[in-house]
Image: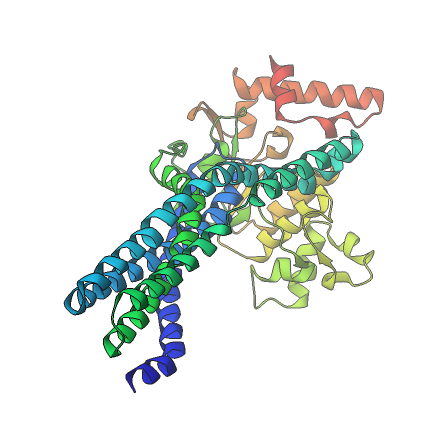
Length: 471
């Protein structure tokens, strides 16, 4: 009666075990992923492919390690202890047989399986990270690879890495499971042979069969644990190794009152973007167009309206006109409902969408990081002038390397190596010796050269070019 009851309840009990185990492990993995993401933010020396492997593959490997290795081992240890205790009370002969069977299936075979899987784990984890890097290069660098004719070579590298992984994983190891079943059957046969017939022998044989069934998965668990260990080591190193400390933002006292427009300039690495990021952290009401702003895979309307969910079509049309986005929208068959992503639009279109999003947010503080860098010079100047007029009643902080935008600015902060070296109105700074005056003269020289040659070379000049000319 008891055997029948347990047999019927076996399916439900197994389901309850899986449900409880997965619930506990998935909650732990949710916390771990958050810690891994936070660690990746601190680390600046990790490539995208490796970061993807750590977040996805390595964390999933740890999840498998808990569900398929740790939990079965704990269950086997508990069942083994109970089985040996009960068998010791009933028969010394059965205790010896069961003990040897459990040692073989619980220690010897898992050890052999782990040794066989060790080399596989050592090769597949780094190879998978390498394969992820190849895939990212093929996807994100497809244009450059195609232009330089390097795509076939990169494909061959990816295929070679995938073939290496497949060859290692095909190595034999399945016979370990067959050996475990052989030991299980041999133990039951030994009990039936050595013990006298009767209910006690039948109970011991059935108990041995049941106990060893719990121990059989330990071989595959040991092999899997060997594969998981490198991933666990990578995650541990990621969480314990010190990351690149965030760069301290320059300490600048800024007046962010409504209507105040502030410009921040300086050479590359001066701390301009760090200062802007610090303002964004300190001022919850600040919104803006940053250099790393994200374009979502969706319609143009969706890319803007999440910044102001309650806006209407007039609001959308207004900001589109300010950033000259309406001209592009008029050429699209679906207009605002055209689906885009970062790879299907140009740099100028991306810049306009980001600017329109910042204006639509209607925040009291607007942060702009090189807002018209990807646009034509003349059109960029006009857009920035219109944006300043549209935000006359809001605080605006503008990071730029082009000083022609700053005519009329009453507060211009010049940074170098994280400290303020000049500050004042644009009209005053151009008359003072120093970085600002040198940069202004360099821009004037380039502009005059472009005008004399009737060539719009200024559109190709960036901050490093100006630094070189200034020197």
